[in-house]
Amino acid sequence: MILQKELILPCGAKLQNRIAKSAMSENMSPRHHGPTQALIHAYQRWADGGSGLLVTGNIMVDRKAIGEPGNVIVEDKTDFELLQQWASVVKDTGLHLWPQLNHPGRQAIGAVNKDVVAPSAVMTKVKGVSALFKQPRALTETEIFDIIDRFGTTAVILKEAGFTGVQIHGAHGYLVSQFLSPLVNKRKDQWGGSLENRARFVLEIYRNIRTKVGKHFPVGIKINSADFQRGGFTEEESMEVVQLLGAEGMDLIEISGGTYEQPAMIDLNRKKSTQEREAYFLDYVKKVRHLLKTPLMLTGGFRTVTTMEKAITEGALDIVGIARPFTLYPDLSNRIFDGTLTHLDIPTPKTGLKMFDTSGFIDILWHEIHIQRLGEGKKPNPQLSAYSAIGHNLSTTMKKLVFGLPFFQGATKRGF
Ligand SMILES: Cc1cc2nc3c(=O)[nH]c(=O)nc-3n(C[C@H](O)[C@H](O)[C@H](O)COP(=O)(O)O)c2cc1C
Image 1 (cartoon, rainbow, N blue to C red):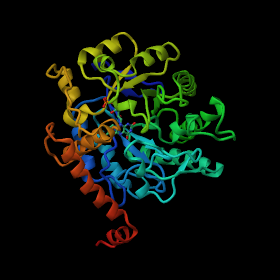
Image 2: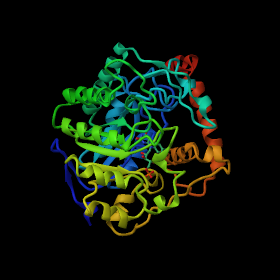
Image 3: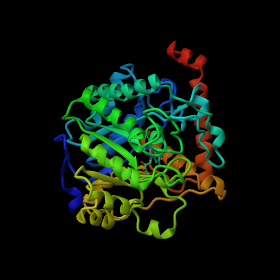
C-alpha cells in the first residue's frame, strides 16, 4: 500500500507513512493554558493509532492573543514538564508530533482578549456570530518584529521539550493569512501592498524559526490555496508564495483554504460534486506539484482509501492530511493499513438554522467535544446532536471564561 511508504523530508527527518492527522484545536486548556492530562491522553490515543505525523491543534505564541478560551499557550517554559509529557507520547515510536504555532490576529474571541490586533483595523464578520469578535487595531512595526520572534522562541521551547518538528499556521484567516490577504492587509509600509511585501511576514517567521531550531529539525506550514473571498488572497498568489516557501527550505507544505468568513476548509457550502470528488483542494495541489519539489500535504475532505491511494500514486501529493475523522477513528491509520477500514464516515451535525449550519461553528464544536471524549477515555458518540453539542459547549465555555477572569486565575494559582 503506497500509504505505508516512508517519506524523507528535506531536513533529513523521516515520516514513517503517508497519513497525517491535521491540526484540530482541542480547546481543552482553560485557566493557565498549559497542556492538561486529558489533552495528553488524547494524543496518546492518536499516537497508538500509527499515523506517521500528528499535528497538534493551534498553540498560541502570545498570551495577549488567544484564539479560543481553551488554547494552549507557549511563550516561555512555564509548563515545560507538561510539554515534555505531551511530546513523550511519540518517544521511541519513530512517529512525528509537530505543534502548530499560531497567532490569531483579528480572529480571536473578543471575550478572552483585551486588545485585538491585525495587519490593519479590519473587523472579522461572520454571519450570526460576528459579536464574538472585537474591532482590531493595526499592529505597529515593533509589534510585528516581536510576533515574528515569538514564533521562533515558541518553536525552540517545543523542540527542547521533545516535539519532533513544528508547523506554522499560515492558513484559515489567522494572522499569517491576514498579512497575505489584501482584504485585511491595507498597510502602506514594507508589510503591505505588493505580494512581496505581504509575504514578508511569513518568510521572516520561517527564517526566525529556522535560525533557532537548526537545519535538521522539520519546519512545515499550512497555507491556503486561496481565501475564496472576493479581493482576498488568490490561487495565483498562493502559488507564488508556496514557491517562495519551498525555495527557503520548508520541509512540508500543507494545503487548505478559506477563513472564518468563508470556511472552505470544512466545505459545508460547496456543490455536491466537489464533495463526491472528496479532496477539496486537489486541483490546486496538482498545479502546484509541477512548480516545486517540496513535499506536499493536502487536507480537506479525504474519506476513502481509494482516493487517498490514487492521489499519492498519481504524484499529486506526498502526504494525506485528515482531521475530523480522527475524532471518531483515532486509530484510523492502523485500521487502513490492516485493511479493516476503507471509508471514513462522519456525520455533519445540523441545527436546521442556516445561519449556524453554514458558518462551520457547529461542526467545529461537535468535533471538539469528541476530542475531549477521547482525552477522557470515552467512546465516540456519532449520534450526538448539534443541540447537545451547543449545550455542552456553552457550559464548558462559561467555565473557561469564568476561570479565565483575573480573580479566578489568582485564586487557582493560590491553590483555591
Ligand atoms: C474541531 C476542529 C478544529 C480545527 N482546528 C484547526 C487548527 O487548530 N488548525 C488548523 O490548521 N486547522 C484546524 N481545523 C481544520 C482541519 O485541520 C482541516 O483543515 C479541516 O477539518 C478539513 O479536513 P477534514 O475534512 O479531514 O476534516 C480544525 C477543524 C476542526 C473540525
